[in-house]
Length: 142
Image (cartoon, rainbow, N blue to C red; front, side, top):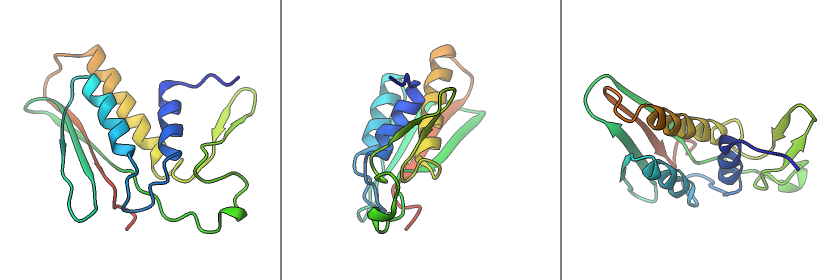
């Protein structure tokens, strides 16, 4: 059994959503739920089938905003993939684990890392100076 970190679990859950641009398939809902539990204020900015999520914690400056996207390009012929592109297959290499799937590198793995880093920062620094946040779109690839 592979023990995953919260970041790895979130990345896998995001990959398992076939969010081909501009259809978010609920990726931003997952992230929004986690950030709200960490006391972030969220705003949805949706237009013409594109979903956008803005999540902020704190006020004033300094202001740090991570940017990302939850959409991926089409997977093409999925029969040509070694692993299903939306399965989130985990390859156990003993000392390491590889997460396979569309968006693992661009950019669902990074989305998960940014989200969990923000949650951990706010947990450890609930009264931090300034504002930290995350802005995601579902149409970067389009």
